[in-house]
Amino acid sequence: MVVVGAGIVGAATAYELTRLGARVTIVEQDVPAAGATGSSFGWVGRHGRWPGGAADLRDHVLPQWRRLEQEVPGVRVRWSGSLSWPPGHHPVGEPPEADADLLGAAEVRTLEPALRRPPEAAVHVPGDAAVDAGAVTRALVAAAVAGGARLLTGVEARLDVSPGGARVLGVATDRGPIAADHVVVAAGAGTRVLCAAAGVDVPVAASPATLLRFRAPSARAPSGRLRAVLSCPELEVRADGDGSLLVSAADGDPSPAHLDALATATAARIRATLRGTDDLRLEAATVGPRPMPADGAPIVGPAPGVAGLFVVVAHSGVCLAPVLGREVAREVVTGAESALLRRCRFGR
Image (spheres, rainbow, N blue to C red):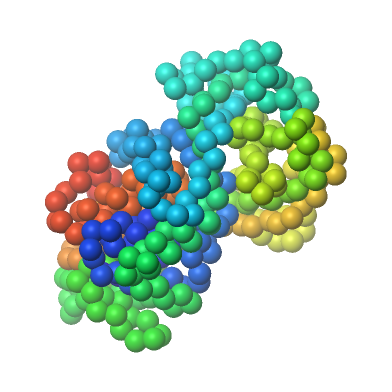
């Protein structure tokens, strides 16, 4: 089998395939986690919109992340919880769901002493978590390789189909053809172009987003440590394990001048929000092409009209990677349709 793409979804799928005994080749045009995965904010939870078939996967997100954390060396999850305000701003909606608490200002101050001005009310979801999506992806790829998978990086794949396009034969690369009875395309925003060559339309587009990484040496003091993932109208920020602060910006302009202006404005908002950040400095700014299906729901399943070709693309891939990897691998290896994926198919 061939898995095209070594972002977090492709890596999780390859790992699960090897666990089921499949012989897997991972083909990646760059390096693992080079695309949208490497620019992911890494918020894991049941928050956000869950359109279409995504709703069927929602309750499996946290249990599957806990499973991967136990199974795979290098998969580390920060079970930090999340804090959002005003209450209606939080993606889980208002009133809070059963797994969320509505906190007053005093409770918020106790939970997050780093806040300069605690809000009068906020939604706390203690079960939410955060991951370094790039590190997780590399750990999953390493686990797949340890299980017998072959990894090819810096290789651009093209689908190889039979005359008439009725069956996939493998992939063609600049290092030669790779024959395979099954090809799983997990190429993120590149999925549409890749599959179009085989006559399959995958309605997904790139939605660039920026990840900013800051460091504030004084924030290492207890009073300056950020505990939870914070989401408010001005800012979406979390602490990373190395002491840096990560900020997600729904802004995809990659020009240096724009990134400089965005970083300056974002740093000002962080300083106004968190104690111990007066010496904040930018460490990195990356722009990644998030794959966005046209209707927002995951597209997962056999490609129509091309036997042996399987597609998996979703937003948010970071949240869904463990459950998608497991379900896709089981379906490809056994041929038994996954009940969880029934509403994620082509044509819906």
